[in-house]
Image (cartoon, rainbow, N blue to C red; front, side, top):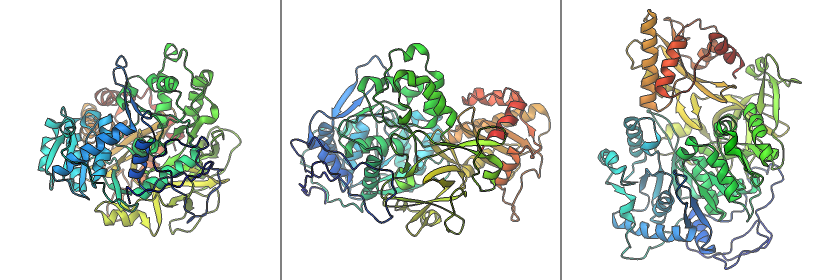
Amino acid sequence: MFGDDDSREVTGSRVFRSSFPDREPSGFRTAVWDGGVPAYGDDIELVHQTLLHGFAHAAKANATTGITLLHDDAALAPRFASWRAIYHQASAMAVALTELGLQAGDRVLLVLPTSIEFVTTFFAVQLAGAIPVPSYPPAALERTVAALARLGTISATAGASLCVTVKRLRPLLGQLAASPGMRAVIAVEDLSATPTRKLTRPRVGGDQTAFLQFTSGSTGNPKGVVISHHNACHNIQAIGQAARVGRGDVVVSWLPLYHDMGLVGTLLFSVYFRLPLVLMSPLAFLARPSRWLRAIHDHRATLSPAPNFAYAMCAKRVPADERHGLDLSSWRIALNGAEPVNMRTIDAFLAAYEPHGFQRTALMPVYGLAEVTLAASFPRPGDPVRGEVVDRAALARGHAVSRPQAGDGTMTVVSVGRPVPGHQIRVVDEHGEPLPEREVGHIVISGPSVMRGYFGDTAATAAVLRGDSLWTGDLGYQAGGDLFVTGRASDVIIVHGRNYYAEDLEAVAGRVDGVRPGGLVAFSVYDDDEARDLVIIVCESKVADEQGRIALARSIGDEVVWQCGVKVDEVVLAERGTIPKTPSGKPQRHLTRELYLSDRLVPNLTGKLGLAVIAARSGAGFLMASARRMFGRRRDSK
């Protein structure tokens, strides 16, 4: 239980459980992972049994390690708070929360920007015996109305009893108080008063829920992934072993703390291993990508993860004068995950930053998902990125056939490494039978990081958990021990690391006047040039005149942005009967996508003008230079 004292110390071993030592052994290091796959069932040894044990140990270790928060305004001095100071603040806040009536097991919605207060509140809720539910601050979304609707859905699904936010957002979130079971919307500033009594430490075990990680579905049905303390600690321990974490490591991140990659992969990881963490907001990165690289330079960071699009932005949008004097030689683990990894992006980033000390072997494409807490597979540190050129047509048929070089009819698939320690990844057919190497099938994961289920949704849980195995909804193949992810079997669209459900986009687009009811589908197409997934909506309509079609396409794009917070890259208007359907009349998304990619839909496209209007109004930044270029990109997309 939390508060128990386990004082074992083994210098130089992967076991390091000294409770609050005055001095850490200089040889402390987690086990060096050699890339082998442990047999499923072989448990990894945890440094901490719960996140709260790790938090307490980090607080007791010293008063000099903690979070350095970089302001959005680069002219302002950074703010530092040690893990010890954050622990004391969180303890005081936990008392304040219990005095407001918070009880063990209650869910608390956190609507906070990247800040020390987010960290303090997250652990305060746990120290009070309750369950934090991190969510998206409205300021980070396209539209306040859509953000509030999404927060309302998450609050209702989680059955949250309290919402903690900042004072400036509290007026916007007042309507959440009307959610079923919600007692109050509280400003975090009002929880910082000196408590009237000491905190009674909760008795927390590894099987208890640590937090709910809501998948980033749009308007319809975001699901709350139930992550236990053991889930989180096993995954963080596995990441640490896979990354060969050591006492000299420093983490830098701009990833949002409500997302699993930012929450687990940077914040909780740093707490668990008592590492310095340098934080900046996603908005600061997006406004000036060089600030991420400069933070790595200034703080001599060794570990920093990001989605593929971030590396593409740094390769394309950081001018030469902002690269001047940059030294990235300390960066030994540059994880690339949360969305498809593009070999062109990797090559472009290396070309831009190897002259600045970046090590080619530091780039590590990885694979994971919230349902396994975070990480599922890692390459071995020091190995170069492994990309395979395969025959595109053969891959579509389920066979990964190597080709000697890239050319027409080929595509490059990037390895995402091997299962993290203590976990197993299998590629199986639809019946769960293992497939041989280089055969494409369903990716199935087993291990101690696999979620307990979706909160309050037994049907959704049963659809993905079969025994102790998680069916990820992704497709891939294995070769030489490595995993290659080739696509998605589920109808999920990933944009910049966030998941959007196709049915949600379709429901929104279907409400636009002029769209034939039941006659539309949404899907994504990966674009090599853009190094991201493009969002495509195909809909049937009777609108015939060109201006009317342009207006309809624009309305669809605007409505999806407004309601879902995701831009639409192309709207395809088609004649009635174009979209293939099942015998029961349900549109077939995957077949429609195949027809689109092979130019067999024979649609009436919105045209360059219509797409330009959509791009201008949604901020998509995607303009179709010509029909030929678009068709070329379709053929080269996977």
